[in-house]
Image (cartoon, rainbow, N blue to C red; front, top):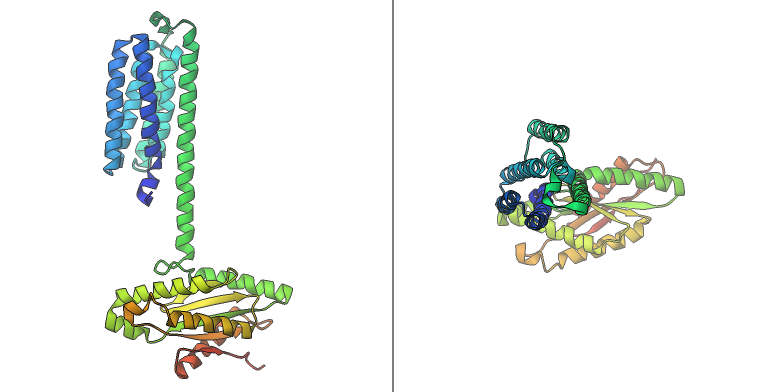
Length: 342
């Protein structure tokens, strides 16, 4: 389901529920021999099918107004013909929920239309008398009333669940946008910064180790100049996938800026970090996914191990210094930057 259709999931649920409901009601009105409501219900089924058609065409506002108008008209006509004793007036509540929960209707109009539903419900309840017995319902009147009330309750529940599904999806989307880089799908600088603060706090508390590795794509500007920025983007995406596939579950990879990536290696000492990064360097250089794009790429790494009391900013500066030395020494290598002397 794409984001747009998920946003209008309330309408999708409403179409399915509405068609089921009006198919059942058509059978009920035929059994009661209420000819006027039989024809009204045939028209209602046609309107719900039409709403489904407009929904598939992306005409969400039109579909919503058609469903809302049908619910209002059908509820009022059925109540006027059969009276309030069968509970058809309760369908005004799902109608109000439908229009209020629909993102295609402005908040102002939704509030007005929802209020209209409540006002019409109150008017029907206060003005109409029981007239349904003339259709020979007998002991079935209570069951029809109960069925209508229960169906309305289910419709309201489905509407609320649909709104919750949309809200939870949008929350996940917002979290992803706030914590991930849109090009590579990696975590972004903000998330990595927060993660490293947690690593530092844990290391200070438990006297444990962690390292960071700052890496850069060698001659990336030349790739963009020769092959174009689209190929450059694809190269970054392939590098990100290759690295993610080879990292441990405890490691975190983020896009730090431009073609620079940062890896946080928890519970890892310097020599182990060097071995891990050199393995990654070789894997990227041998990647069969990257070679068809630009003939292959190499990476340069700067690695630094956290020292007690050191800030993460200072730690990353040391990794950056190691990266600078790797570039100066010919690129395509991993360099460990020792702690700064006091």
